[in-house]
Image 1 (cartoon, helix red, strand yellow):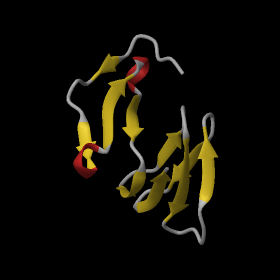
Image 2 (cartoon, rainbow, N blue to C red):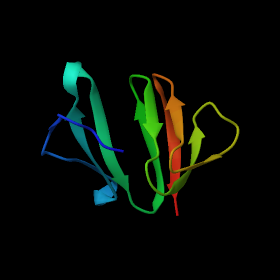
Image 3 (cartoon, helix red, strand yellow):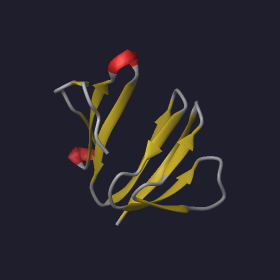
Length: 92
């Protein structure tokens, strides 16, 4: 995946002792995305706004707060998280 003509924010968002790192990018037209890297482990994230997570490389398992079970995701897939919710993500 490639983003053209973007502004990247150099200051990283660092979570879980550096095992999850992301950078915000601003796209033409005002849209905003976050590019991140998740090292192996299991993590829980909360959301204020709805979010769409796109898996660009690797694989993970995800359990939304409202879901009964885990779903598998690989490169090219995505999942959506409702606002005021959260999810667990497992990277092996």
